[in-house]
Length: 303
Image 1 (cartoon, rainbow, N blue to C red):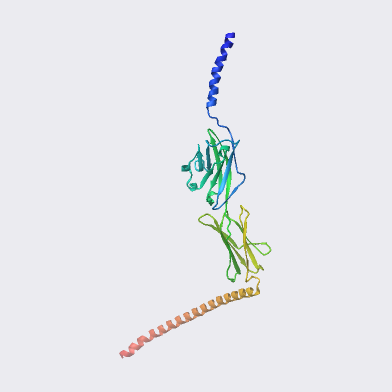
Image 2: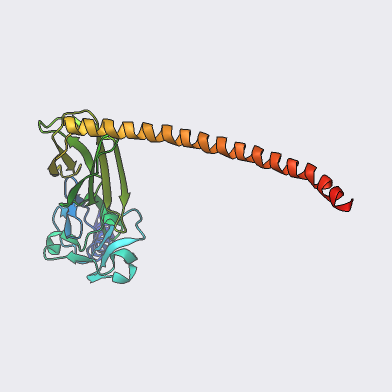
């Protein structure tokens, strides 16, 4: 029994020592989580946006793979691996527009800087860390915004339908909310609202208002960016309001003139048609009369 106990010690030592050495030599991947910026990040069109993410617990990420991507993992916006930025794999529209700020990478924090923000940069971004076989990511949403300061109101000459007022503006993203308001701030229903997008995918807006018998002496064109809640507005005082009696008289006069012209057109058409048909009858009767007299004329010549 003693010999058995005496021999078991060295055998256990020979077993555990190599295992301990292997564990010490093998690189260990400490597990972590990734935290991104909370809430949507507003990115001004044509400006700069910075997206940060942080490892928890803080640890050195210099040797890790750090990948920023949109919808597809294989199409990175920016890729860093083992101490190097790998620009070759970056998708084309982000080439030379991104920079990875690594001042705090030893504490597990990096920041992606995107230059010259465009409408296509709108959406979600994945911040992905990989250390050995372990990886984690965080998602941050970017909302691109553009607000135009150029709003133009046009007043068309009055006609029989009323006074047409038009509001035009461009350079908005996303599509703004648009409405007419009176002097007391009450909403006036627009006649029409239309939009288009330019080559930069910014929205151009057009809104019209047809004033007939209303008493609005001034109107305001209001636009609001739904993301930033920023408002822009332009007002105009109507020089010929729809409630002006002279405007109403002019409108009635134009309507009367239109009716008179229509009646005259019909009357003149009837007269021309009557003269035309009477002339045709006279021509036919004259031709028939001449045709009947020609044989008699030649007969008299012969005898």
